[in-house]
Amino acid sequence: MKIIISILLAIVTGQMVSLGLLADRANVAETNYIRVQLEFQEFRDSYDTLLKNVVSKQKKINRLSSTLEDVRVIRHNGKVSQIIMEATAYTASEDETDGDPNVTAMMEAPIPGKTCAVSRKYRKIMGKKKVYVEGVGVLRVNDVMNKRITNGIDIVMASKDEANQFGHKLLRVVLLE
Figure 1 (cartoon, rainbow, N blue to C red):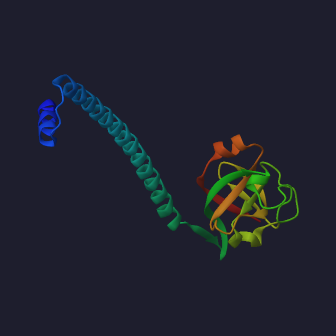
Figure 2: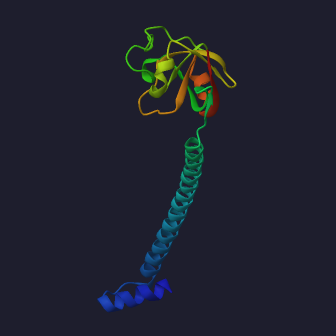
Figure 3: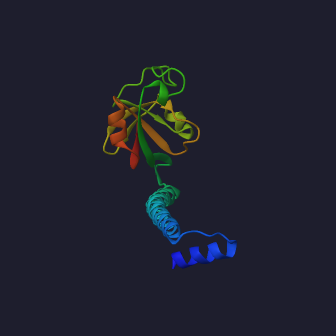
């Protein structure tokens, strides 16, 4: 079929070309066509994989967002006693902190596994209270988080591997007297 099209094209344009040359051109065109089809299929497979990953991440974000909309604040005798918060972890390194990584908002050194930072709306408990974080233990609040985080607790870890392993969780935080 491609040879016939090539011959017709040669006749219409007035070119006199040997059949062998036309056959070679047809073979090259067919090879290029197959190569383009294969590249397109690889692109489509990559696109499909990327799209699946994006959809999966979006579903996870939607689940987390809907969970955060239902954040529970438990009161006892009119005082907040428990909060469900987004818990993350960080290290006292320059790339993860503002300014001096060795000084918290309370002008103290962050202690891995012993201190934490909370969202700015909870800064009133900073320095005054300790909190029990479900699955972590008792921590002293001595720092505040970036203002874009509105319902979080950030726990100081000794290494980035520990912080990455801790990940991002919704945990119950109990305010201790």
